[in-house]
Length: 332
Image (tube, rainbow, N blue to C red):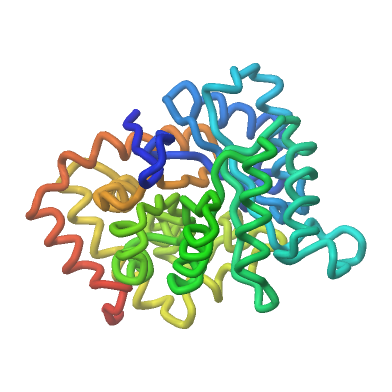
């Protein structure tokens, strides 16, 4: 396993990590999740991602139960939680969600209870909130660090200007600044990481823990012949993923993904491994969060790390021709 610094912090995360979104509690039960987590850990993965909203908190409970059963030493792994949406309890009352000081503090305590841990390694604001206060968020996160409840904090899918505002406020008031952003990053979604966040990563040292390297399976060829039962997009409660992933570009995205097959074949790898390895080429990326739904799939995707040195200039040009920036290729 390769380990990369989280931006300019001293923390080193595995270049490939494992997340609990969609799969935990839906496709994977406790035993399946534990088997996948054990494999990831044995392969050197040291970062495991979750959020309060994932299956209304159950994903974090599953991760916590697995950690306890596997008896991992606390100094050998990192976990993250994300805060904003709540867990759906209390009828969605306004104080049980959002980015107020009240919810940030209480959600942190609740996540610790679900994980069965004394502190969170990373604590992220899951999305920007129209009613949020930059000052309130920065002061609260600083306080949680000072209390030892979290070690690092940051954001997920925030506009660069709002992240810059957090950094500036923290600097002006000598607070612990945000050090991580978690954006989507794959061959179809590149602008935010490669352009919008460039100053954040280069000038401010923000680390990126990117998600959806396979565009929910599109880049693995899972939908080459249509959306079949048993895939993520047909999982109960997640059918909205079809509109989210394709956004009216289904034919063009599938055609672009198919154009990657000859490139993968020439390298003797799968399209999934090619797409994951491509994400790792970006030096701004600290870790790529995988979301495998079986032990075999996870093992296969973890092997993408060995592919990175084989993506020479010719392979990179071929990939760029197959899937132009932000996937603006036409179908056919």
